[in-house]
Length: 89
Image (cartoon, rainbow, N blue to C red; front, side, top):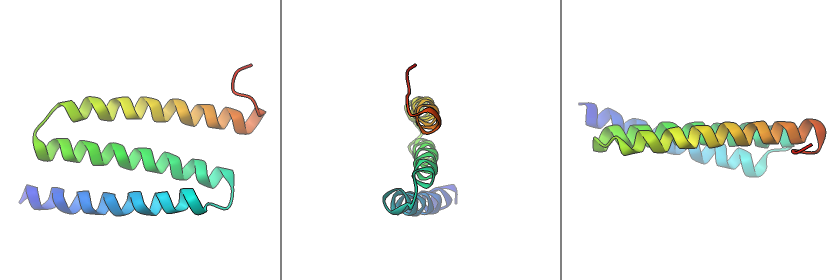
């Protein structure tokens, strides 16, 4: 039963990734695109973790942690750029 639920969740996360990518491309303003990018990397983390559970491998959890750190740093950099117009002072 767990295998079917994981497959269903993988499909729903794939759909969420497509919708977030559409918002990233279509977004009317820069904050909308930044929010879509945050949603994309959070959905990617969830997708990788679910795939790791499905395959029974612990390597995918480390990859998800790396993506989380890179996503946080990129969000902070974009937010700083939006506020000041410069990343490095």
